[in-house]
Length: 193
Image (cartoon, rainbow, N blue to C red; front, side, top):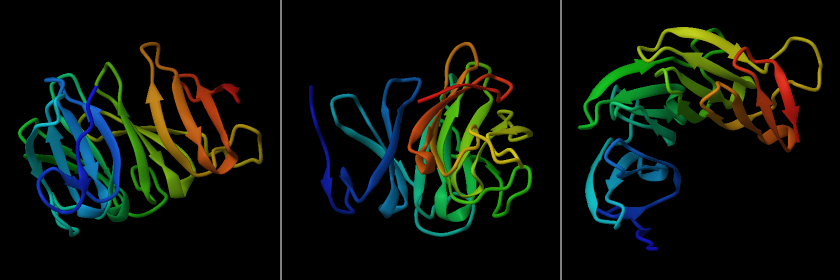
């Protein structure tokens, strides 16, 4: 068991780390949010590299928040302040930018958690729009879940993270309702607690 990092802006230092994932090489991929970059480390805490800087251009970040990696090693990052998802190759090269500010299909308002399923689809906790959005690995919109127009017990309020199991069930931290929700692959409420 080990620990690494300390406050700062240098190599191996963090300012508000908000999310991490293991890539296909079992390296830690960390959202160093307030430093507006992604850092990668070995399991022993050795710094491998980092990429990103503050800004709104493709490849730049404004509070990167959530991160996950697919089986091929591509890195999916929810870019909270820029209202988008950015997808990078295992080498840190930008592959795609998905979304913009708004409430329509494929638009975001402060995306937080992100996860990739076994088929390569990715799911985003769209915090400010009170929903989960699902996309193909290329960024094509598939659907949204949890933001029903009627007032019901399964509406999401400020979802902060999402995970998907091998059967397609979505597990959502429903921050604004102080609970966890379990949704089917079609977005139907299975359970909340």
